[in-house]
Image (cartoon, rainbow, N blue to C red; front, side):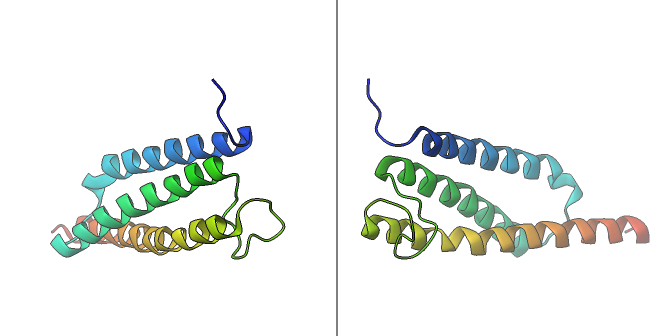
Length: 120
């Protein structure tokens, strides 16, 4: 069976999925050490799912279409510029989501620490 695309791109696609899955497992394991309200929990949940999937799916698309998606217009890399631009733009929501998610996680961990300190 012949699978198209660069071997390194497929390695990256698999590693993105593995890494993001492990991050979600680690966040779930650390959940008892995070104190957030209902809205914060909802934002943390959805932002975590967003960055986990939307970092993985472009890596798979890059492997399928032989693009990189690292620069608008394709940059020095070969591949269809239109597909590259779509993949590049698809990468911005997870960048925003990862900052929201990790920021909320850090805030929740700090709130849990402060509650243990005060005995609440």
